[in-house]
Length: 52
Image (cartoon, rainbow, N blue to C red):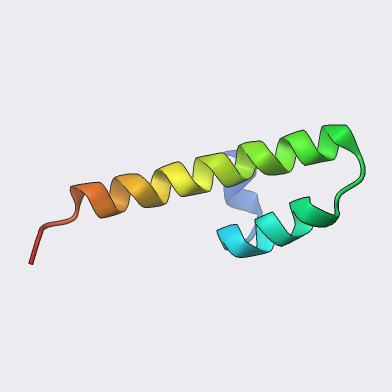
């Protein structure tokens, strides 16, 4: 089991909101990496989904 699968899924909006309030640079970097990963996954799902 990967470390990410142990945590409940958060929306990109929730992560972005948390990042906007974060003061710790290391935590902010983690949040932006998580945000980028989630947005990339969503982009791939949309890009690969069958067109109607």
